[in-house]
Image (cartoon, rainbow, N blue to C red; front, side, top):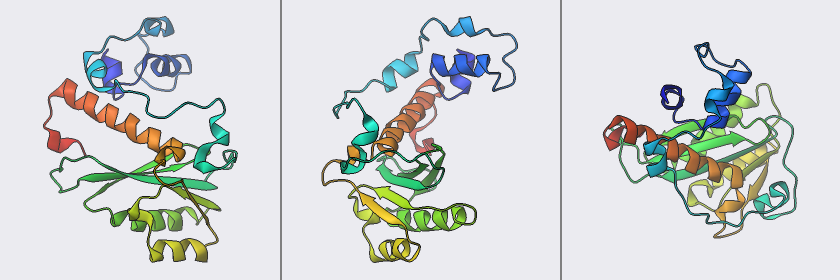
Length: 203
């Protein structure tokens, strides 16, 4: 249970893989069989339960982004981003967080935001950094107003990046980053529940 909490309430199967593949130090006293039984974490049970709100498809890779299109297998070829409102203000005055993710590599970037209009600037700065070594071809987003502006549209056009948007009222089509929002908030809630930290320290 100590390692479960140390790795932000990571699930048992993922911890088992860390032990099997020797991906972290300090596991010398543990065996893979130690994680065969389900972890009983009260904080996880209280904070990670959810109702399925979007139907599951047999082949996820062919329905994302509102069109029949396969996922990219080339690192940094397609980026996606989304902004999530938390409703609680941090000590630094932030009420939102923004996630950006590389579709192929699944590498993630997270930004704390005071206002939504900071999101476009973060995307442009991230692309400028990545373009030093990589070729970015596509950027995916939902219909949120934080990404609907002339400066971002012009920036993407000038850099030859295709803009992919979800259909209206179905942000779930931006599936990878939308799911990541929920996973990250689950971890934050579990840590806060287990440690008793004030809500203002969520960010």
